[in-house]
Length: 153
Image (cartoon, rainbow, N blue to C red; front, side, top):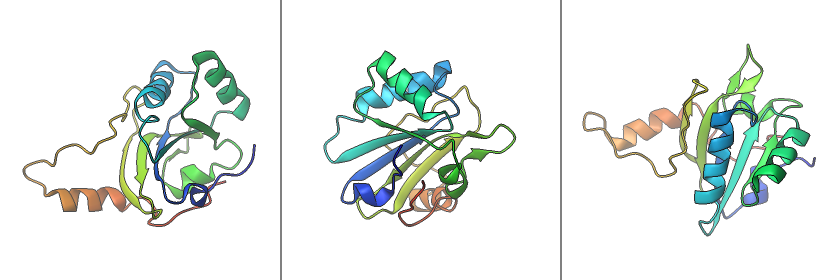
């Protein structure tokens, strides 16, 4: 249960996914999907974060064969959830979200959904909508995320 910081992954693209609880069907499916699809991309580190206890995450990973993504617990302080705007305060859970951080530690895109039955597991950005230029759409999404590397534990 060592602290983790983005600078630990300097020079890599980091995909951070968060979810309410690994003990739910959708959250488990999201973690399995990232383990299968995203973890095999060279130069990319996938981190999954929830407010589950570290022991629950370890149990899940052992049972499901999750070996290519790193699961992290934000249970103790919810520091990650607070800094990235992912905390569902009334439940003390993290929102389902995906954040992509470039090699320099800058958030390039983020997607979140407060509904616990949907999963933002798409890694590639969606094509821009015709009525909204892509630059503006991404800037709007980046407004809620930090623009620098954070020590979130």
